[in-house]
Figure 1 (tube, helix red, strand yellow):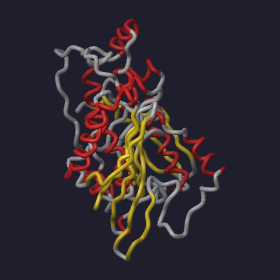
Figure 2 (figure 1 turned 60 degrees about the horizontal axis):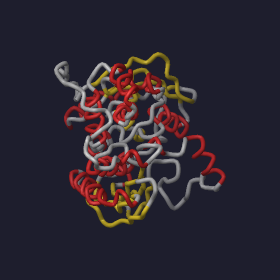
Figure 3 (figure 1 turned 120 degrees about the vertical axis):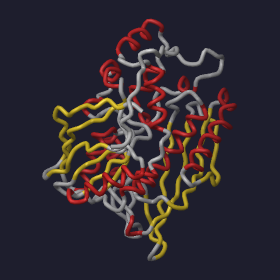
Length: 357
């Protein structure tokens, strides 16, 4: 499987957990919630959609509310997929924040199998103290989108007490190539294309209280700067290659974001009318201990993820082909469970696998 590299980290020292010693403002200090953890909770969102009368399917769309994106058939051979996603900073470096925001926004389109003609209308909000961060944030988004074969097509920028960045993304695909969270069937294998743990990894980098810094350092079995660097590297890895590799074989797909692995599995289970059993959790090495310290629930799949991997179901007879496609594309993957009869999500003493980049 791709992405198994290990390395000697014993000689590395932690950089200060409280960030860059310069006087530059820290983006994360301007928000109380960070990355996809600022999303409205799953049950609250469901109630909101129901109260607003927006929980029914629309006949003029291939799919819409309840999926990662909306899709409209333009011709017999072309469907337009559109989505919007933005969030508060999870990293302090403006350029990296832009890269993470672009990868996260595009991921919702990739989760549906739409990978062509990618465009993004940027959504950006900053407090007055952070206006100098606007240019590097936009540059990060533009560079990330360029690497995904897309680009910035315009956008909208406002003043906001909490900084946020993301965008409205469009992409196209053949209608028959589109994926939703509705196609899972009992017996399907369940795959994930990035390790978990971005919330505890980045939470550790935001600790600034001098006494607690030592507690955080002592909790992890790796240098905190390496854990954080791994998390940023995963969050800035686009899901486009994974989408291209899996869409021929997948039965259903979504991406793992603020609801966490268990939460996104619940969405898949509910929309497909099945149960999901999670048995294996790949995590960024060092984040298990940090999650335990912070109480994020990583080892039961409840930790919020930002710009996480694709969660894909595949029939058993196509599993080997899917794994070969992921390997051929250089995409990290792990089988994390299976689809069952029944309903809901079961997480019963899963195997936790530390992953190093």
